[in-house]
Image (tube, rainbow, N blue to C red; front, side):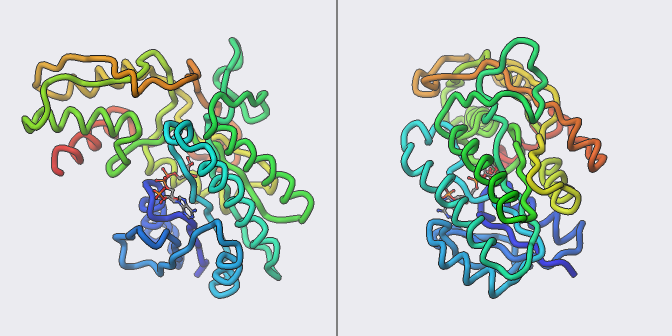
Length: 312
Ligand code: A2R
């Protein structure tokens, strides 16, 4: 039985990934979380780990000796990165280098995936979309810049130390349990609260014209599981649906699923200092290597996310 370790597993993706690895891949799953976090899955072995503590990563890796490592730990919010750039830089760059460096100290070569972001591409010129992995990188926000850095250093580690290290650029992923600091969860939560009568029938929104590539989180973790087995060291793979939709379309879809009469208002706090107009993935590289295709439609994931918030 292969041993998989998920670093930063208490977040949105980690919970889905641990379940998938256990149930569908028959792996023994070890997960790490921050001291203050909780993991609801009782079938995994859990450890507290702050990736800013490199020695702690080293001892844990020596103790568990995982075959596969999924590095998910991050400050993952673009909005929060504007508010707290130093924390984001510490966790996403220093923390990730700690993980790579700890893996380098092992006497064997586990296969590692570093999770980056479609945000890394930043400003995309006309004709560049859907965007390929080798496209020019022009990060447009602090979060994206930290993930570019992780990707570049990952590539250097893979080559310089002959490590089995793959990089992913995950485009927006959505689904039930996502924190409402992300747009789809935020909109669904607002609609659910309006339906419950605990909020006036007004939706507060940010930039509605931005187009993003949304994939259900369950499709995303399936791609990660395929890549950890088949990915080539030092390579970067886009993971996304390959189809961008505007935030306005998402908003309209969510509102159409409700019987309430809902007004829409711009909340200046939800507008970002710089926003990239369109981000859409070309996933040919991933699909050719693994045969992966997204299976869950946007309508389905949005319905399930809205129902999740209705039941809370
Ligand atoms: O920020 P928190 O309290 O939600 O904790 C996050 C955790 N984390 C850390 N873990 C270890 N050491 C740290 N110094 C540290 N700082 C934060 O990593 C959270 O539990 C986890 C990341 O999960 P989420 O923020 O929910 O991200 P998600 O959506 O699961 O995305 C996974 C990866 C991230 O690397 C994203 O940047 C990428 O996929 O898109």
